[in-house]
Structure formats: structure tokens, C-alpha cells
Image (tube, rainbow, N blue to C red; front, side, top):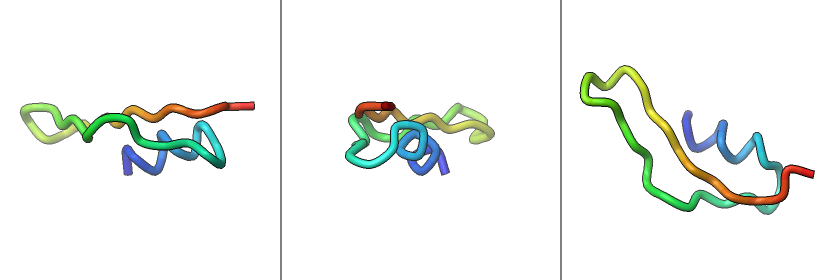
Length: 38
């Protein structure tokens, strides 16, 4: 879900730039994407 949220925030043409990061307890994840949010 982290990847989908990162891509949706930036719109078409966005891309994931780093692997997903998961907290030690597995309760949170993060994904980094880049693109033009216009």
C-alpha cells in the first residue's frame, strides 16, 4: 500500500525511487517516489 499511496500522490509518470522500508515491528511502511505533482 505504501507504493500505491506514493505513486497516487504524484500522479501519472511517477515512479518508485527506493525499496519499501518497514519498521522493526512491521506496523509501518514507507515508499519514496518522484514525479511532478502538478
